Length: 484
Image (tube, rainbow, N blue to C red):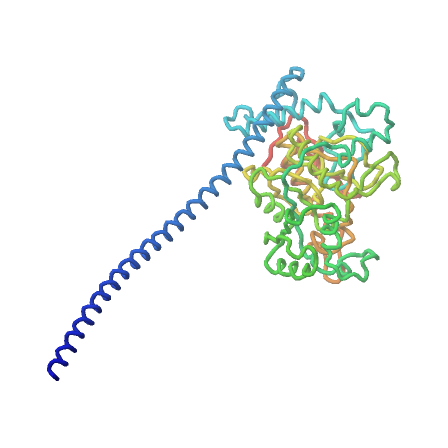
């Protein structure tokens, strides 16, 4: 009995062993399947990563191709328009007179590149258009600045902003209002960037400004001025970039703007110095980007809506007006071949006009202007002095393009000599505030260097009162314009 029971137990164990072997074989098969799945999943993951990398590369290539296509399309459009315009003008050689020889005698038209061809056509068309459509100002204001600002041209040349048909039946005062681009312009919307070079203006406005209205304000200076102005004008914050000297300045601005609507504004660390910072901005954006540069102390824009010499002839640019002006300026740049525009040099209504757009050589104020980036054109970079960088930038553009634009009915509201920080900080003596003599001396020296560089289109600065002029006069017109 015991033996039979033992044998039965062995039989049962053998059956269990066989079942376990079968189960083990099944598990091994499942493990094999799982390993295969894991391997394929790993391969799929690698394939996905490779595909993502390829997609990123393709997107980058597409972005570059789009940028090239846009810039090439714009250049081709400008060339076609200019060739058509030139074909309809009276015959004139591109080297007629010293200005033509200076501006176009450097082989621009012979260059095989589209950009060089366009530059030559732009300069020639600009000169032809000035001769065909220009009309002199009613009067000429002469600047006594050591920079000779606004005086290189014998007469300011202007073009109309509307047609004669649109002006029929209107008086001069009404005509001025009709021509104002922020009212009349039908220019299409365009892409642009807003750059604000700034230094030290994160501090409370009460510490930086002498104006009574800011006496007890703890707002950051830049927020009480330019950022509030841009808000009023409806400029999208995503288009605005602050350019500061170093990382500490960036942290100070970020801290100062906390809690405001501008807390998330883009801040880029640039370099120290007014001239250096603006050169950095010129090279920072992609080539052919439309950039509007505005200083950190701009309170608004004045519009001369009617004739007169008093403040009654001025109004504040209404909300939304700046955007339409930016669009209009880009359209005028395409029409004239300009790559730089600005506002009227003087804030005095006596020196402003209700009509026209100046296309002559002269200062384009640094406090608010627009330009097309051409970082490959090294001759456009400023070289001489912080205090005269805007004069130099304008002269270099005129030497290259034969035209710069200034809206004579608009002027920026800014009081640089009443505020601390910014460029003024360079000329402050500890405990004594701003020293005008130091700034004037740098302006005078910068103007002399600029005159040496482009003597045929930049007049020598006048001497200080009571001193002999040792800077020389304007050279004979046959001297060639050369941009260093």
